[in-house]
Length: 117
Image 1 (tube, rainbow, N blue to C red):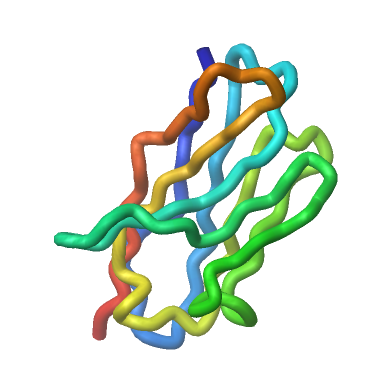
Image 2: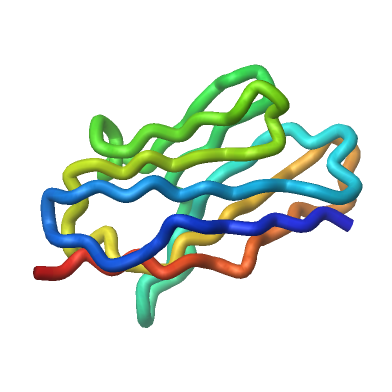
C-alpha cells in the first residue's frame, strides 16, 4: 500500500498563489510518475500536471506558464506551485502516484483550492 498525504490548499484571491504538497509513504519502491489532478463540482476529474522519476513534466494547456510541478531529491514528495490563480482553477486537487509494475495507481484524499474575491 502507498499512502499519499496532501497539504497546502485553501482560499485565495484571483491572481494569488498557492503551493500544494503531497508526500508519499509506504510501499513506494518502483514509484515512477507523480501528479496532480483536479475535480470541480459537476465535472470529471482532469489531469493538471505530472512528473516522472526522470523529471519529465506534462501540463494541462490552461495551466502552462502559471503552474509548476516539481519533486524533492528523494522523489517521494511532489509539489505544485500555482501562480496567477483564476476562479476556474477552483476544484478539489488530488495527488496521484504510479509505479513500475504496480497493479494500480494511488490517490490522496484531496485538498480544496478555492479562488474567489
